[in-house]
Length: 283
Image 1 (cartoon, rainbow, N blue to C red):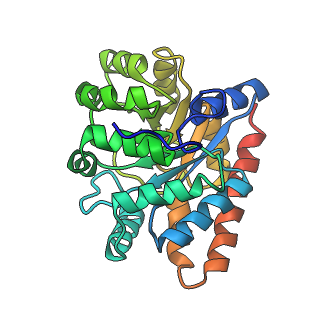
Image 2 (cartoon, helix red, strand yellow):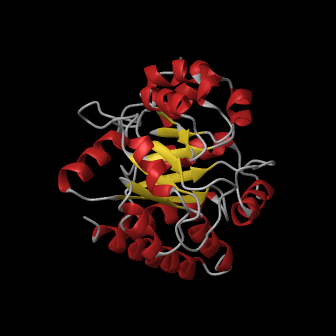
Image 3 (tube, rainbow, N blue to C red):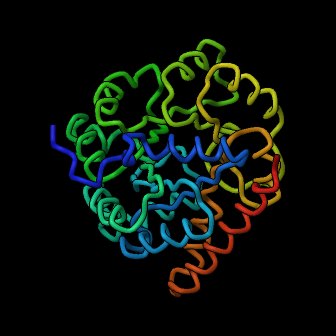
């Protein structure tokens, strides 16, 4: 196993994972968290780094970096296009780990990689866990890795203090929710509706009952994602969980203003700031 480089492990000076530190701080302050998603390498590594820093300044509590994949089955059209642009630009998993390593010299915001399982398998489970920890990755989200099949990767991630974030969906059975709750680290990613990612209007039916079931199965924070696109919608969802996750609405701005980096950074920061302000008013 590769040793973690000084100052680049997914833990703070007290030896705690940064995800846990942030959620503990939010809980003690009675506040809700904002998790912002962008596709790494779209439109380039340098711009991704600047977007991360801009979103942090605007109020994002945690940031997901999407690893582009040629067959993103859980992603809607906005993120699919971002993945294709990123791949066409030469983005690789190794390059994204290098990006995280460089960001760790400029920020301590928790950074999570959202990737499909194939790139991790290709990298090698043990090698990837060690490399992710050394770079400063705090958590890993894998949409196509069922919790029932996560034990081999969990065995490699746990000693490296990198959380593997599980998904829970409205269709999850009580038995599956119980297993998710027992294995969860960092937080549980609660999918607000079935289908793919993408901005939608309104709240999905049955979300309150689903969140109650999820809450009963774990002591970990609950973050709600899929379809959240506006400050008003984020505020409504924040009442049901501990954090909200916004991706497609942000990635859409990256796409729209790709030709003007400064405008892109301003627009993304403005959206993140409005989302954070909205959820900050939630008790």
